[in-house]
Length: 111
Ligand SMILES: N=c1c2ncn([C@@H]3O[C@H](COP(=O)(O)OP(=O)(O)OP(=O)(O)O)[C@@H](O)[C@H]3O)c2ncn1[C@@H]1O[C@H](COP(=O)(O)O)[C@@H](O)[C@H]1O
Image (cartoon, rainbow, N blue to C red; front, side, top):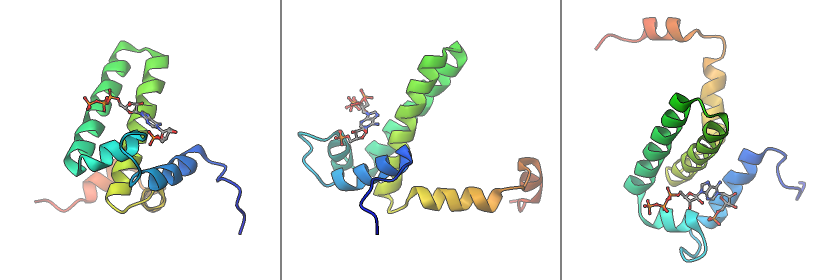
């Protein structure tokens, strides 16, 4: 097996988060946030989502990119905390491939 880092930055970020999450909160934001618990991680994810929405409404491209990066980082921290991985999300996206969102919605069981 190769020791080279994964070519995709999200995969490298996921690996870094897995290494850091139980590290020293004094030197790692990932560790500090993880130590504050699932609810705090989820809250931060929500804040970053709102900041991304605000950037979108301002139509500021640089801000949208920056806030999206914050959002994706916090999503990766949440997935790691839940014992999930980007591959789990990728598998779900693969499962949905070719299925129109409108058809999927129409096929949902009525509650
Ligand atoms: N991509 C990111 C990344 N994006 C955003 N952030 C941090 O997310 C934090 C969000 O800022 P906020 O002011 O909203 O959060 P806060 O200061 O905790 O606010 P409160 O909730 O405490 O009020 C900032 O500290 C950002 O630096 C990130 N921190 C780390 N990474 C990546 O994760 C790697 C590991 O980071 P550490 O675990 O910190 O070493 C880094 O090398 C980067 O690659």
